[in-house]
Image 1 (spheres, rainbow, N blue to C red):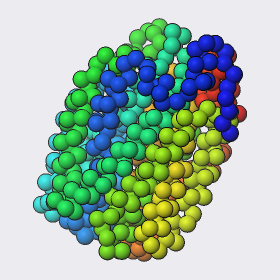
Image 2: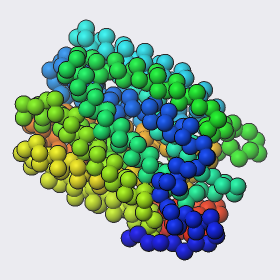
Image 3: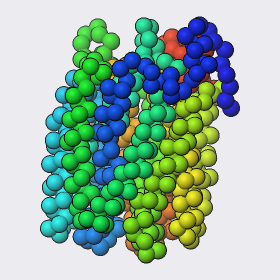
Image 4: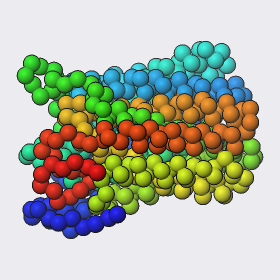
Length: 436
């Protein structure tokens, strides 16, 4: 439940009186990476649905289209943490510049193979580098927020929860725009137009973001006796628990995307798939706006469990939907339940890991979402081919239910180790406290 924390200093008193986005966006220097970061992450929201529409058009199979998209997601999930670790060690620009060039080239190869009606194995082969080189703009922006909000003591700022909410809103705003734009291009211009636009925007947006060098975190090169002498972020038990949990969120994204596309196709309105999915993303965005403006008394661990319970319940009626307006309304509800889980998970991971592995930790969560999405796209695509879109909608329910159970079992790992930090999501504590 929301509450107003007791101030422990004049600065914290200001935060208590005016928590939220206005305070956050007045942080010096943040606009230098917020705007380029928004432009650079837009292509990612277009990638999966553009790929599904192109491959389905050239092969006639949602199963094949889902499998190709799944290969892309798996490749991203496997390679993203390695890219995040390299960014922590050598700097974001050093990883981003070659990455966006390779990604654009890989997408171009995939488009060429698809239009040439190449065999499925060739599409799978091209999907691997396409996913492996997806620019990890979201984790990089989140790392820049952590640096911008760090005080003289380098302790996590009480505004990190608001920053996590802001990033969730930004991500979902791109998913309101991206699927609609990709669907319009693929159905109204050319089946390959969505992927071509994705590659073009990746080059332009990624280059613009990489040029913002002043706001980038400093590299943490491994050296004897240095603070950057750390193992992988995945060695932290809490990060592993969150990775498992975020697989469920990926299952919701992937299952919804393919099943909505199949549902609108069955209903005779294929052009509305982007609109319906955009409604789902809009729910996530609206919930993120509200969630980030509230100071919470409940611990992040309890809020995470409550968020997953609500998400599981929201997915229950999807398989029984018969009309597009009802699907849009239920998609909105599901979206409303995603933001609290995402925001709390990203806030928690910042408190669980040292600064030297922060970008890598964020990419593990992003990669988990991609991996869950890949599995869901594959399974939902096969179910839609053989049993219709209603069967595909069982995938989001199954994925989030399994993730909720696993999260409940592993909840003991979601307690930050004492390191003189402020409790995440609780403004006004001077000393380190445990959550829950």
